[in-house]
Length: 398
Image 1 (cartoon, rainbow, N blue to C red):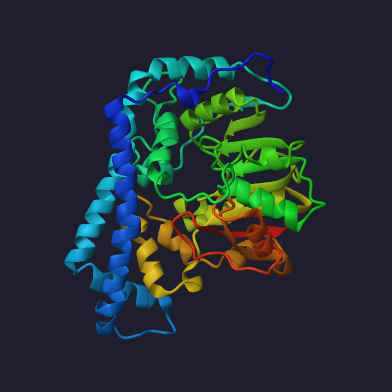
Image 2: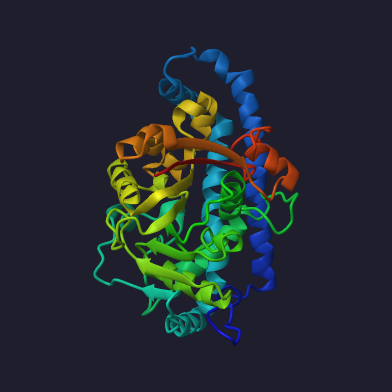
């Protein structure tokens, strides 16, 4: 426990006006319309019409994907769909910026108060001299203004707040809940580990590229005795993450580090995780980071990473569809990551091939506990990847 008195929730400080809330709902449902209704019609267009003009390449899925993209980019439907999607992405962040800017001084104040909370199990350690990697500093990933690292004022947390509130707009209308109070990446994988490996009780858990800690804090619910650690290169999101954790009374050690080389001792962690992290970094960096993960894992320790499925695991049309982000959403390493073999990536970093795996799991919030258990036990199939229905993981045991 961190404190006896309640600490203000940093998430609750930026209050939207009536008009801002309406705009955010509009943007959220616009995204749903684009990603569900229009995307479904675009798929029909391809299979009913465009596919007939493209010769099949059953051997090379990447080549087939290129052919599909070139053909689809010529259609009016794709041009409209892509433009709408691009603008909806920008509107996601713009829709929350005003409320963040109005409350920035209060956000900074709460963050600074939280930064003074340091115990054996909770801390915030920033490194002002850390060089921000170019794959973060040279573009606004996801089109989010300022990316994750930009600071506009001293002790800034603005981009952390924009990310926290913007992601709610981004996915709000898309998520379906059959299991209220459950779901999300961390809840899904932590419960999978608990069911699949009932004797696995990690003492220390590390989240790489943790941003505001959303996919780290839920591990506390399943592994209450574990110490939680989060690393990121961006100070503003770490300040915000620390303040969130303090307000939720969840002890976490947050530190500003490049995951290619971290300052932890060999074998320090029993579980190392990440969520939608590897597709944002160059291939060279991903190889270095997986080697670092291998160094940091204890004997029999686990590493699990939620990511996008590799090119060879899905059909060429779906490859074309999800690679949109690589070309239009400031995620240039998206496609190159998907061309890698995750198992090969793990093996080259020192993991044994027999201990490496790929998982397809339904979001725990979208299915009943019974159906989730069936998938874990190998007696059920997860829904298709995408739109928060299911997740793709790769990982290994040391």
